[in-house]
Length: 368
Image (cartoon, rainbow, N blue to C red; front, side, top):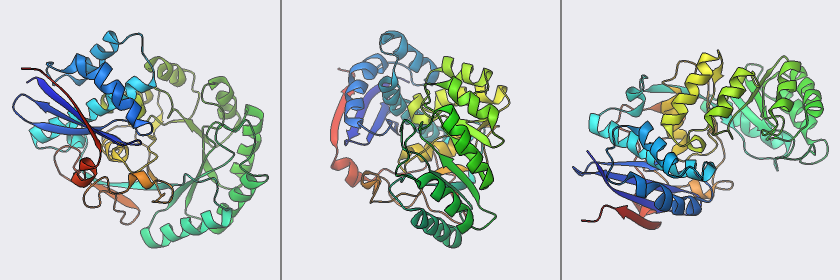
C-alpha cells in the first residue's frame, strides 16, 4: 500500500504530520519541537519527494532511502523532519492493526511511573522544593529532577551560589524516600563537574545529567569514572556511530536518547538495542508535553532495558504556552505518580482539531 499524501499542520514550536495511503487510511505524527516552521520546510523539500509513492511498510528502509538521497545533509534538521514521518507511520500501523504502538513493538499498555522534570533555572530553591512537595503530596510523584549550573554555561552558575543552595535545600526539604536527580545541561568542565558531583553525593542525588559539554565525551568520561552516582547523557546525539562509540567507551552510566531528535521511534529502538547490548539502562529524554512524551511512553514500556521512570515535564503554561491544548482529553493525567498508556490503536491520542485549524497547512501529494 503506497503513501499518497503527506500533510503538515505547523506553528512555530510544533508541526504535526498526517500520512495517507492508497486505501484512505491515515496516521498522525509530529516533528521535533522548536523552530518547527523551519523543519516543516525541510520535510516538504527533502523528505516528502522521496517518500510519496513508496510502500509504507518498511519504516527503516524509508528513512534510509531519504538519507541516501539527501546524503549531503546528515544533520539534526533532517532527522527532526523524519521524526514526523516515522511517528505518523507507527500511528497508521497501529490503527490498521487495531493495536497501540506499544503492542506493536513488544510491550503492553498500562502504567508508567514518572519523575517530575523541572525545566526552570530562574526559580528559587525554596520555590522548587515547594512545588516538588506539592506534587509528592497531591499526585504521588516520588522522583524529581532539577537544574544546576547554567545551560552551556562555561562553568558559570545561573546566579552565584545557586547550585549549592538548591542541592542542599531540595535534600533537606523533601521526604527521604524521594529520588533526586539533577541536569547541568553541558555547564561544567570535568574538574568542576567532579567537584559538583561530590556535593551531589553528599546530598543524596543519584543522577547527574550532562555534566560537561556533550560534544566533549572525554570530559564526561572523567566525571563518570570519578563519581559513585550515575552520570547520564545522550539526549543530543543522533548518529548511530556516536551511539556505538559512547556505549563502547562507557561515557556515561545511563543513556538518554530522544525519540524526536533521533528521527523517530524506529531509530530510537535501534539505539535502545545498542545500549542494551552494552549492558546499560535506557532512560529516554522527553522534555515537554507534546507527542514526544506520548511516543516515549510507548517506547519505554516496550524495551528490555528501560529505566524505572519516564521523564515528565512539570512545566505549565507560564513556561510552555505552546504545548497547551495540543490534544483532546487528558493523555498526561497523573495518578499515584504514574501515567497510563491506554489500549487504544496507534498513539492513542487525538490532536485537537481547533489547534489544527489554526495552524499553517501544507501538503505534498502524488499528482494524478
